[in-house]
Length: 152
Image (cartoon, rainbow, N blue to C red; front, side, top):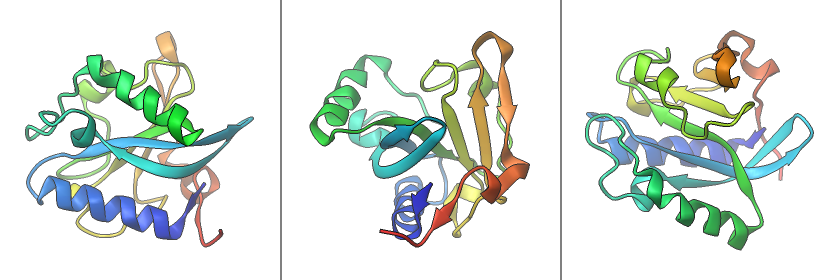
C-alpha cells in the first residue's frame, strides 16, 4: 500500500531525475506486517550513489550501508524498489538477472515511459523475486496486489 500523495511524489521524483531520457529509481522504505507492506518513504538511487543513473541504472552495492543506516534512522525497512523504463513495464534481462535486493519475496516495481505521467497499479510492472525460482509477475493483478489510496 502507498498513500496517493506519496506515490505521486515518487513518480515526480523519478520523472525529474530521469529527465525524460534515462532510467531512474530508488528504494521504497516502509513497514511489513505479514504479507502487507506499507510504503512510507522513497530513497533515490542517485542520492545513495551519484553515478547510478547512466541511461540505465548501475548501482554500486557497496553503498547499501547508507540504505541500512537510513532504515535504522527512520525505523523502516526496504519493502520494494522502483525504477523507470523508456517504453513499457516489462522486466528486462538485466532486471531479471540483477535483483536490487536478492531476497526471496522482494518486490520490484517498473514504471513505464520514464514516469512521464502518473501510473497506477494495473499500468505498472509488479514483480516478486523468488530466488532460484525466478520472478512472479503480479502486474495484471494491479490494485488487487498493490493499492495506492488516499489515507493518512
